[in-house]
Image (cartoon, rainbow, N blue to C red; front, side, top):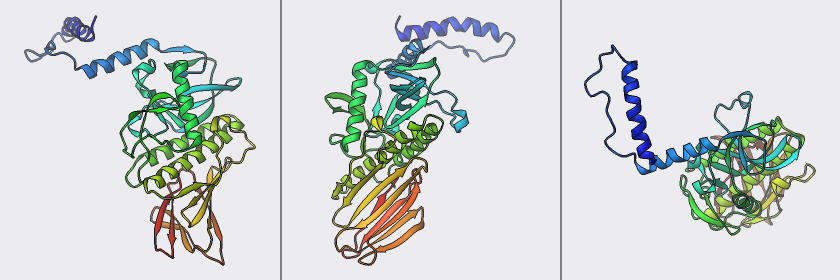
Length: 356
């Protein structure tokens, strides 16, 4: 039976029951009305997807490719539903994967936006944050609310490899709220666009918030979960910086390599460095136990520059780099949203560099 027919039949069947339940209530004539128009196609498709996801939902054992609901998030102060796309079992009861959420309007280049052909799924778990891997403890039986085929899992792995390597080259210009089809490693995926300027793009705040959630999850999991979070959080900051500089056509040359989050070992260094123009080297590092990002700015050649770290409208650091002081270091919270202000004294150019 077609969707519109089901809706009409359901409404007609319900009318006598509703009338029986409201006996003695004075309702205006014509209160009960049969629908005279068909359900709009896009509404029908949405209902069909929800029905398919509901029929596919079950309680099952964790397996790669499943999207499961994370249990007991209330103790972390989380009231919305959060899922995780499972990728790899690390030990008994512990799994690595990526957070699955529903805010597709905030999709970036490393967010995998699920489509109907990817398999049945609840809309509350319709976007996989490939930039935000986690390691979590799960019960033997979980609420399974989505399933990806092996082929679509390979597409997610391809996005993870892209995130490891460099900024996406075929994602188009920044456009908050827009998603589109692109190719990653030979696979067709639907993703968002690169980040725009932090003043104009709420996705910076969005990603910082979920980075903070990933850290809280890691603190309730295993010791290796902290290293996974630290590598992923630093990589997110690095990729965001690359997107920011690419949008301004600035020379921003990598000086170090960040290891892949899903292959991160606890004893590997979590740091990365860049050279900004011919002005300075910018080094970022994270110590997982502290949950802060350490920033080191070192001048290049004879450059003279002022370095300020702004927290809102307040300067948290204000230093001058010249021949008497070659570098400066400062630490800030990973989800603080602090901005590094670099001013080249020889050209009077100012760079407002988003750190987190």
